[in-house]
Each structure stands twice: as structure tokens, then as C-alpha cells.
Image 1: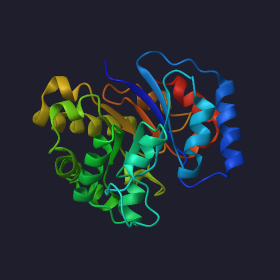
Image 2: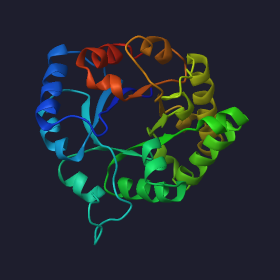
Image 3: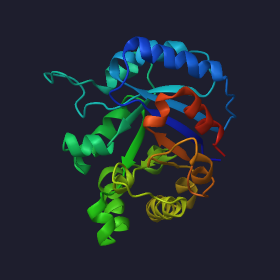
Image 4: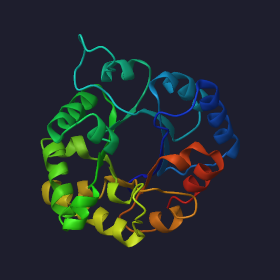
Length: 253
């Protein structure tokens, strides 16, 4: 059975004191995760070690980096390598988040390189994909997301993607006043799984967790996660409130 995952993306938020307080509050919610459930916290680089230390010994709880360099090392001031992340005990890394694509102009070929270097250093990628409003309005979202998957992932072997994590971000429904329904989430998640099936076969595609990243909140998580091809969420703002995120975790299948 593929993993059901509540992934928090703290983005560029919180001071160290606030981050540690949030981790403490989350620990106090004392939510038990079953064997097929994970909680993953993607936190800013300076907080990776402190937050990982807070969650040490907590079963099925992990800390992730929000990005890594496509380069292994060298004269790349301000960058953080996969080797560095591995050396401090980090196991997961978010790659291709919509904000990185938009603000840092990361394209599919660059993300393919990041995936490769992450896997080389035994990091588990959380690969993000999704379409903007103009793509959705043109009705070309399926082809667009399919191309993202093909150009960034299809060079990988079946063993590389077995148990992989993909996060679908409907960028058109984030901060636009438009709302994505649970049915729309299911439609795209089913499409993503069909694209993966066409490349890797049903068994591998069914092992891949596909998370929904479109304004998941405590109030809508249960309905969204109840869709057959939605395996949890990549959560932004709601992950900064302990009680909200605890409810989201409890909404996992």
C-alpha cells in the first residue's frame, strides 16, 4: 500500500524560536501515525537540525529541505547541496515547487538534474508539478502536467520511482479567488497516475504517493484526502498552526 502523507511546507516563515515552539505544539498534539502514514515537515535551511532534533524518536515523522542545488559542490555561493543535506541526516527534499519554478525560473530539465543528484545522495524527492490559470483556462492542463512529468522524471528507472512522492499544485486555485473542487483534484491525480502507468506500469504507478497542494485546510482535508487517487497533501499556510495541521494529519486515509 502506498504511503498516505501530510507534508508541511513552512516556506520562508518563522524565527527559530517560533519554529521550535511550533514543533513543540505539534508534539503535544500527540497524533499517532499508522504504518502507512507519514508526516513530513519541509522547513527553512537554518531550522533543519533544530526541528529534526525536536522530532527525533517520533515514528513516521521526518524533516525535509525545501530545495537543493543541481550541483554536487563548488563555487555556488548561497546554494545547499544534496550531500550537505544527507550529512545532517535529512531524508527528504522538495523539488520543483511552483514558487521555485516561477521566481527562480527552474525548468523541467534543471529539475531532472536535481532529482538525479538527490537520489545519488539517498534523498527522497517530493516532486512538484501543476499548471497556472492560463493553462487551466485553455483546457491544456493534462498535457502540460504530463510534459512536466515526462521531462523531469521519465529518465528514471522503475526502481528509482518505486515509492516516489509527487505533489500536484493547482497554481490557478492558489490566491486567485478560484477554488479547486475535490473532484478536480481527483481528476488530475488520476491523470498523473495514468501517465506514470503508461511509462512504468500499474504496479509501480500504484506505489507512488500523489499529494494535493491546493490550499489544504483542516476544513477541507477529509473530503480531498477521501478521493481514491489523493494520498495526502502538501500544506502551506495551515501547516503553521499546530491545531490545523494536527487535524489535517488525522484526515489521512
